[in-house]
Image 1 (cartoon, rainbow, N blue to C red):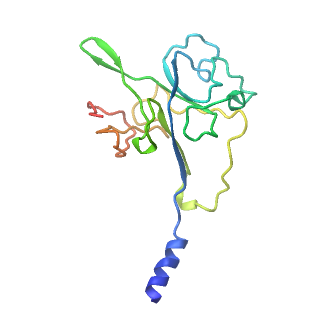
Image 2 (spheres, one colour):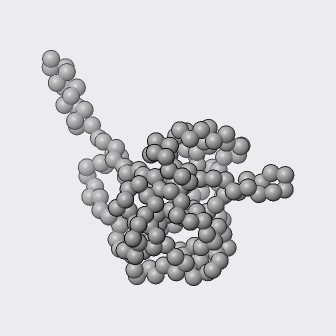
Image 3 (cartoon, rainbow, N blue to C red):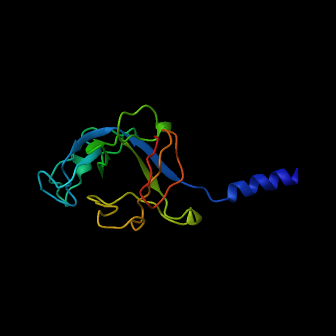
Length: 180
């Protein structure tokens, strides 16, 4: 009896791992990048955009784009933020084919899109950090096309075997074809 109670008590004291994960369908695929190339129409590269319908080529940093949005492609319906990634292409026989993006299959049947993760920086300090929303107008970029493989903190890759593949995550872009 005491052993069972002790095990239950220790389980309550153990650190928890808190995060928020949700899927978003594709909003648009455009040559726009209001952070790296604000106002450039078209931008030098193509992006897949998800999230709120307030996205545009010139997103004034003094305003919050989420406040302009009236709807979102995200399953977390309170999130009107935008997220975008560069579109990848696969070269075969001298032609290029766009690599489709899709969210985690555990999040439901979402067409196209991505999975958005908000994760604590350090699980060992859980409960000791105050977690707050981003400030109005928050902007963030992850990665740079000039970096060599493995030098972009926060940017990770998974070679999908199928839509349920979760791991391993690597800092380097996959060097082989991925079945999924």
